[in-house]
Image (cartoon, protein in one colour):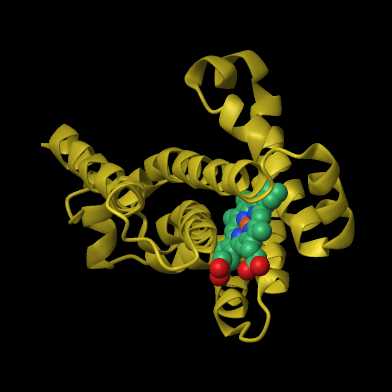
Length: 217
Ligand code: HEM
């Protein structure tokens, strides 16, 4: 039963995370992109990347609040899908927009701070994606956790990139930034202990089901 519940979560994550890519491929091959296809591709890959990275970051705080430890298993696939879209997003910029012209690319990076922030975010995420396997987790031992803390720098950098890339309305990236700030606050040991202690109050009905995992949807 437990195995079935765990598998079902993954059955949701993979199609949801792949849906933007499938839709994008469909729209691109059937001529359904907007009048500015490169801008459309940049927007859609960038947006999918940022949402999946934030979703990956949400797993730990949600697990702290609800006690559903299995949410933690979703961090890796969500983060890897976020990285996949961020890589595609960068490729749209470098290959489709700039035709891999290194001189122009370097010039653009030097001129626009939002590109520097995006590039920094992607560079920080790269070792995390590379070492996300169990083999690397074993090999790196305690250092694995330290390396993977880079995500707390990479996601805010990605959000700074998103904010600075917007010409007018920055409400959406700022809202995402506020959500991420709450997620990071919830990880503070003092807050975390307080929430966990409240969750485990004697007589708390939820606690007894959480221990068995019986209240998972
Ligand atoms: C983790 C890494 C990254 C994330 C999550 C990300 C996300 C985003 C998002 C959400 C947008 C706004 C899309 C829109 O509203 O149209 C955007 C715009 C953009 N990003 Fe990224 N990005 C990342 C890295 C990069 C990198 C490495 C590059 C290029 C080297 C890049 C180039 C661009 C460009 C050119 C725009 C369009 C700005 C405009 O509207 O003129 N991004 N990105």
